[in-house]
Length: 143
Image (cartoon, rainbow, N blue to C red):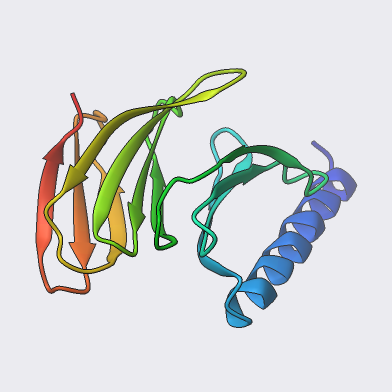
């Protein structure tokens, strides 16, 4: 990649990030981050949906509808990019299989009594830790 192509790509990333930050500040989205290894933007929304976007165009790649009843408050993607782990305003954790043409709910776990605010997955994709507004952190088995 030459300097011009790199600069152009960075400009797109920054423009998209600013657009998403504007939505977040207005209350339209709860969580947003960029996964560099597979060049897909993943975001969780207060309408209960998880959305993935192509960073080059900002075009939507896919949507997971009805991911959570009280909004998606945290999102993480496994290192192999095959599963999404999401947290909701109701304190629920959900694991989604990412297939080429569909997304499938694999597991639902509920221990938190308030919104999930953070999810981190270990390098081997076997466990994740979640933090909640109820003051608890829980380690979950993803096998």
